[in-house]
Length: 223
Image 1 (cartoon, helix red, strand yellow):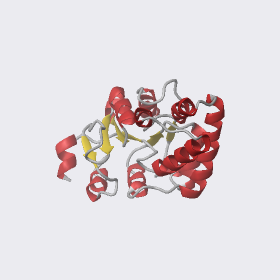
Image 2 (cartoon, helix red, strand yellow; image 1 turned 45 degrees about the vertical axis):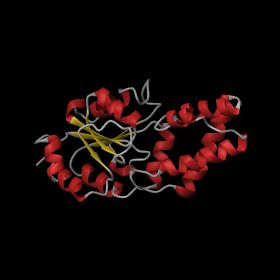
Image 3 (tube, helix red, strand yellow; image 1 turned 60 degrees about the vertical axis):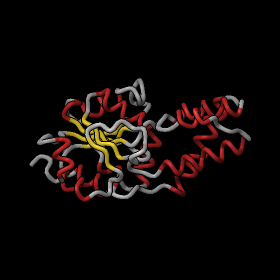
Image 4 (cartoon, helix red, strand yellow; image 1 turned 135 degrees about the vertical axis):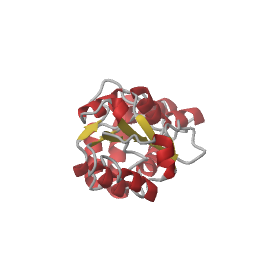
């Protein structure tokens, strides 16, 4: 557990805010499949910078890039992306390794929230399908705040909604967009990414939630 005490000292959170896509749930592979299907449907190809800009963004931002690449009306593309994504979620969605255990352990110690750059109904659906919804006290999405990530609104509102000032809350993120949002909001930050990813490290970087030391550290919260 030395990595956690080195990074956080004696500090422990009063509340925790989890990202969803790519951190708890393997929606990245579902989204990649959806993106491929929609691009093939329109006979379009994304420029590398557009593909990079879509990582961790909202579905609406992704639809804008696809519509531009395909030279199709935005509203048509947005509707097609939403429909296909929901179809794929029903067949392909599952939690990432360690996600369920970490969520359960954290919820047993402090109130927890999920903050996602998806719309509320989709977030509820994803967490329900994977059996995680019951553990969350609060959900934040693009339709509960004025500005989604990388703006800090979602994280600040989630922390305060759980009864904690942002400086007393911990964010867990896997994307640069989300990490910037959490840091801008004043939360402590644990990132879960590959070592080579261009994501702000925050207080500590892990490569997976399936980490016994993480569970051991969670066990000290509130002690």
